[in-house]
Length: 168
Image (cartoon, rainbow, N blue to C red; front, side):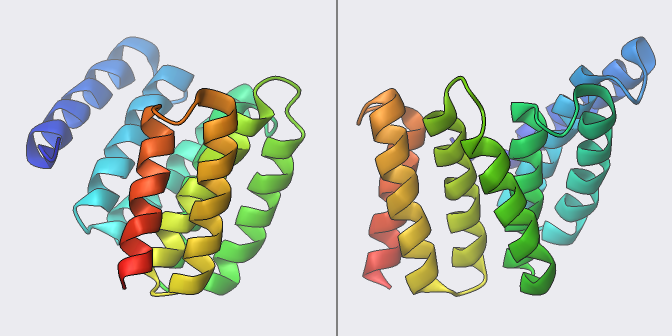
């Protein structure tokens, strides 16, 4: 909806509450931190988002394990963020690991793999790698449409990104 300043303030408040109530190393606290990182990346504060994603990834890995969908999605978000910051040497192996992990999930593999590709497409787009971003967005759209249907929000997001990239 584009109300990023409002969302940022609410996620900051929720993070503080979760940190006191649940502790800093709790998965729910990490989930709030993840959303705060997503907002900061959306408003162009990618360096701040990168640090928050790294912190979140550490919590998810320690509490949920490397093969959990939240950990995998966070890894792909961090890789996409690094790509948008031009850190492709760091980002590419992270994204490959996220793609491998998502594709090995037994339940909802198409959904998680599609979401991972969507994060990568956004990161590549931010890095100006339009052709590669188009390929990732197309893959994301196809996986998400198969898993969720053509009208699902993630599918629509992938389709919109693909159209934006094709117009460049």
